[in-house]
Length: 204
Image 1 (cartoon, rainbow, N blue to C red):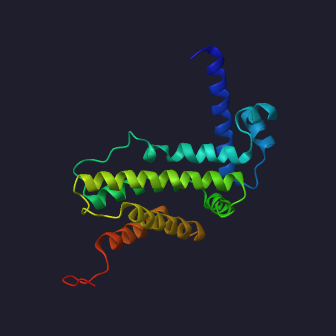
Image 2: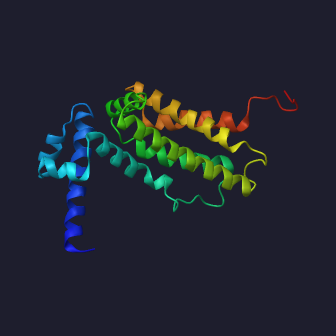
Image 3: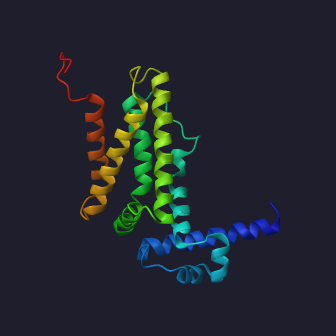
């Protein structure tokens, strides 16, 4: 990497660091590009050279924060059961998410429901990436016979995604709810999903 590229990357990292701090302390709505530029000690035009909007900035931050669990290098120990593997995958994702202030989480969830904005479309794309990660994991677990053969992987992934979404919404809406409580309730919901609701010895 040449000197010019090093300077560019340094400026980009400074902008992201400033944006993260501002978003976390003031929220998405309460932060402007001008304030981010001032905090990063760069010109406003420099920010736009790297990120064309405030939405692009928050999407870059959320993508970076979730990359560990979605990265292909993320590996689950062979000793883990199917349930433990899914729980580890989700817990890694949720632990990254739990560092976000609840106000910011609520703002992002609000934006995700708006289908006509760049931010909502970007958040949906990131959710689809999470779903793809779940599909890959469940397929791998099925191949290793840690899940029963014939598992409907697509709909199983959607069910797990629904559990994740419920846990996040519950956590963000309740100011008293802790990350530990969020993970505990998520584990219980996953347990019900894995164990099923059918009485033993009955087909229906």
